Image (cartoon, rainbow, N blue to C red; front, side, top):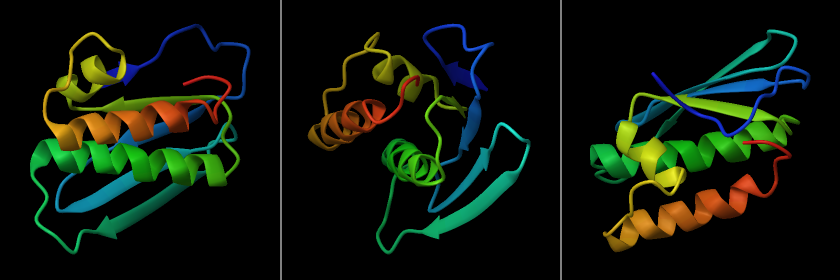
Length: 113
C-alpha cells in the first residue's frame, strides 16, 4: 500500500487510516492506543473506482477528525490518489478536482497529514 505522508511523526500520537474505495467504502481507523474503528458506507449511486477512492478518503478523513485525530497517516492502494493528493500528478476531470479540493480543505483540520 502507498502511504500519504510528508514528515516524520515518530514523536506524535499517530492515527492510521486505511482507505479502500469501491461501491461500499470499507475503512479502518486505528487510534494511537491501537483501537480499531472499522466502518462501511454504501453508495446510493454508481461510483467508478477512482471516484470511490477519492470519496472514501474524504469520508475517512472526516471520520478520523471526528474521532479526535490530529496526526493522520493514510494508506491506500491507489497510487494515482497518492500522487494527486501530494500534487505530483494533476487531476484533469472536474469531479476529481472537486474531491482534491475537499481533501485539501480537510488536510487543514489536521496538524499533520
